[in-house]
Every structure is written in structure tokens, then in C-alpha cells.
Image 1 (cartoon, rainbow, N blue to C red):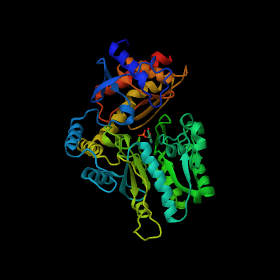
Image 2: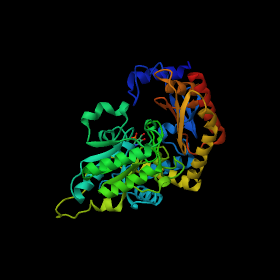
Image 3: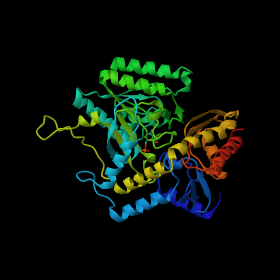
Image 4: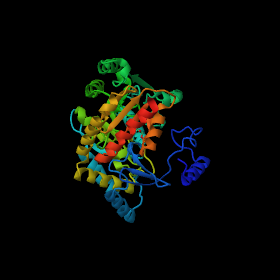
Length: 442
Ligand SMILES: Cc1ncc(COP(=O)(O)O)c(C=O)c1O
């Protein structure tokens, strides 16, 4: 890869930019892709090379890039209202989106989700949910300062979200700064063996029995711990978490930032288990992957604990929010995305795409250098056996040479394509990965 436009832009980038989750000592020699345009599932670089976006631009793009209907909705909104604060005023796209999210909310064992609190990114939705849970305990009995979290969890990078994480590489450094939490083994942790669900449930039960009256919430990425490298777990764990939260008066938070909006082949991962949390965080695909927006869907009983009139003993207000909360352009993109999803049965298509990926990946699962392939819907982790410090990364570089852009999590190569990916592109995605694994790992 020697084209001059890429080289020039990388030099300018390296001189001025500090990228997230990036080791800059090797950035230039790794020759990052300099993206100029995108269409459908394709990213196009400054030299005109096309790459299939195999991870939906970090798990966000649901319908493909620059979708005509979403583009039109954002453009139309831009002509009407760019931004007005959600503190003290409201606006129609924000109201309509809240209604649409509530209408889409999961149903089953648990409360109805009836209110939407907007935030900006996945992390800020998690941050809001944690503060709501703690303040809720304050206002319904007595303050419960602890959270139960899962090992290997990832809920974002702000300090509250890091506190409830369990990804050692990302989080260990910050432990001295963090909230009090109780870590429970992950029900997806293969090191626990085939009884991992029971082990995790037993540990959760023991934690709640000993410290449950200090716990305001249990937080879980339902069914798939994404950033852990796609560690899937059994729905039985979510049912047990619901029961134990209820038994001990704690809230249950499902973080559906990665799993929401059709990713798992259902609108919400919670639907696979028939369990509804008290708070559900979502982000990423909410705007079809266009603009930063996230939300906390809350149960009515939680919302009601925050109501008070002037003169009441406590204000009970949730004193939390961001300047761009509920930005109308973001809401317009989200509304258009949800409309297209409903009209084109995108959730059903995602379920079928997941099945097709499973079929195509079957031969790779037998590859001697592949340790395991884990999948739920269109969320796939292909764990390769390392032969260097950066085997996963090298596989992704080799896939890029074949026209597919991927990003690994350690030795696990992630596939998370747009939910509407066509048959030919699905074939290319898997073929490029298989060839890359052959080239790098054999
Ligand atoms: C489950 C989960 N929660 C929260 C986040 C954080 O979202 P953001 O990066 O938008 O802050 C992520 C990001 O990958 C995630 O996977």
C-alpha cells in the first residue's frame, strides 16, 4: 500500500491527532485506512480503494452508510431545527423518538419500560443509568452505594462505566479511582467450564445474600459481552439476575449499547430471554450509526421515584444531563432508521444474515488455528490461536489486503457487518477472513 494520498494524510494525522484505543508508537507503520467516503457497506479511502465495513464502523451502522432515507431525514431536519436544548424546552423529533423507542421496548418478565432519558454515547447512557439507580435507592429506602458487575464486562470509558467494567487490559489501571462494586464471574467465561452459568448464578446469589442490601443495581450486557471478545452466555443467567434483583430490592440494568437495534437477530437481546430490566441503555445503532445519541429506557416505577413538587421534603430531580442531549438531528436520523428497520424487516434480515454467517463460517471453525467461533445473530467473534503479540491485528491487516476492513479485540477477530449485508458481500467477508487466517496463523 504505497499510494501517495494515503501517505500524505497519515503524516498529517500523525502530526496532529491522538486516536482512541490506539498505540501511536506503531500507528504510522501500521498504515491506517484514511476513509474519505462511504456507500452501503463500503468504505472508500482517499486513494479510491474500497473496503467492506466488516464491523459496521465500530458496531454502529445498521442499514449501511449514507442510506438515502436517513440522509433525507437528516437533511430535512437540518432545514428546520439544528439544535435546541432539552433542558426546559422540548421538540417534536425528541418526543417522537421516545415514543418509538418505548413502542419497541422488550416485553416479558419485568416492568414495562415507559420513559426515555437521552444521553450522547453509550458510556454516557451507562453513566446516567448508574446515577439513576443510586439516586433511586436514595429516594426509595436508603442509599445503596454498590453495583454488581460481571467479570470481562465492558460498559464504556467514563469512570462510572469503567467501575462496572471487568476488562483487565482496559480497566485495571483505574481501579483506585472507582466506585465500589462487587465482581461476579462472567457466565460466558470458558475458563469456568461447562457449568459456567450455574457458577455465575451461584456467585451472584451469594453476593446478593451477603451484600444485597447495599446493592442499588446489577448491570449486565445481556447474552453477549461484546468487548470481551464476543463472550456469549445463557439466557438462564438473565432470568436468575432478574429474580435476584427483585428478591433483594436492587434494580436490573441491561446494557444493550452493542446488542440493541437488531444486532442479535431480535430488536433487543433481552427478547431472547423474555426478561425486562428496570433500566435499559442503548446507543450505537440507535441513529442507524449516523450520529452520537444514546438513551436510557426506564421503568415507570423508577421514574416515579424522581417526582416531587416544590415544598416537598426533597427535590428528587435527576440533576444530570448534557448540552447536546436529544439533539434534533440525531433524533431525526434515529426516527428514519427505525422507520426503515420496520418497513424492511431489518431485524428479520439480521437474523437470517446471522444464520448465513454461521453456515459460511463452519469450515473456519474446524481450522486448527481457530480456537472458537462465538456468535449471536450478527455479532461474531472468531478467536484465533496467537503466534505473536498481535495475531488478531495481523489477521485484520491481511483481510484489508483482500478488501475487508476489520478490527480485532486481542486474538478475537470481530465480524459485525451492517444488518442489511447482501449475499455477495457476506461471502467476501468470510472468504477474506478465512484467507487471512490461513496466511497469518498457519
Ligand atoms: C456494551 C457497551 N456499553 C457501552 C459502550 C460504550 O459506548 P460508547 O463507545 O458509545 O461510549 C460500548 C461500546 O462498545 C459497549 O459495547
